[in-house]
Amino acid sequence: SNTDYWALTEDCDGKSQLAMAAAGIPMLNGYYPDQKACAQDFALLGYRSMPADLGQALDDAAICAHAAAIRSTTVLVLSGPTPRTLSCSAR
Image 1 (cartoon, one colour):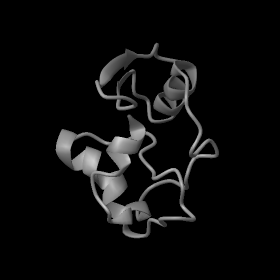
Image 2 (tube, rainbow, N blue to C red):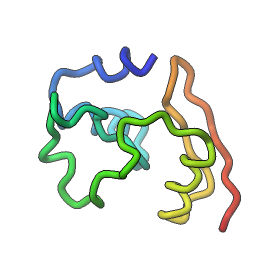
Image 3 (spheres, helix red, strand yellow):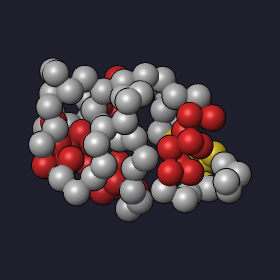
Image 4 (cartoon, helix red, strand yellow):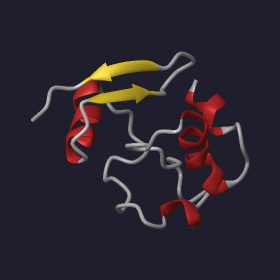
């Protein structure tokens, strides 16, 4: 579950960097959802501001909207115990 994922490291910056480091690919929305409880500092340097839908469950359409913003058509979704690949149409 997501709770298991976020508990893999205690470091607030590490929470968002862990998946990028392990997979070697950039994240569309890998910010820790509760910034008040665990604020990220280093992890936000050089990235866009946090998305307005931070902390909300995203459906496939919302994920693809994030992907379209960076001109990506394939997304690896890490939202449960088993990652899945989502194909988004180019817009």
